[in-house]
Amino acid sequence: MSAAPTIHRRQILARVIAVLAVIAISLLIVLNAQRIRELGRYGYAGIFLLSLAANATIILPAPGWLIPIAAGSALNPLLVGLVAGTGQTLGELTGFLAGASGRIILEDRERYERVSALARRYGLWIFVVLGFVPNPLFDLAGITAGALRIPVLAFLGATWVGKTARAILFALGGYGIFARLFG
Image (cartoon, rainbow, N blue to C red; front, side):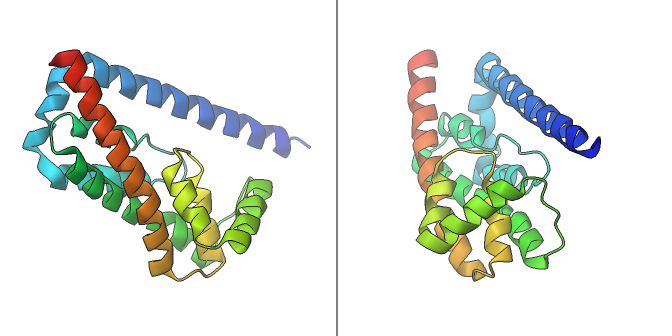
């Protein structure tokens, strides 16, 4: 009986840490607006690599959605969205490969079953929608796609559409916010 509360405590701790990380990064962005504007010197390659790394994490989600917001204030928001969306999509291969390997143990079997049922019902569209909606559970979608043996290129294509559309919107938002706040 003690195993269930331990898992529950770990889940709560992971969520609290993720929320605190998002808050800390958000504060850093606001407090260091000038430095963030200097992201332009790292260019699109830096945005790609940061986006890829932020989305390659499975255990603790990194707030990769902040990258296009910050970068959109310094570079062309459309290109930022395309580059960030591509990096985010390729980063999701870690979850896909974990699911395809069949060697991952899921703590949240109920959510996995829900995503699996949605994938069976709606096909690739569920990955477009889940890629577009900011959520820390997309790794579960990748795991599900791998476990269901969805072709990797189909998964990547659907994921790219959702994540790139979101990244473009966020980059445009970052451009608008920073332009208004800091001229």
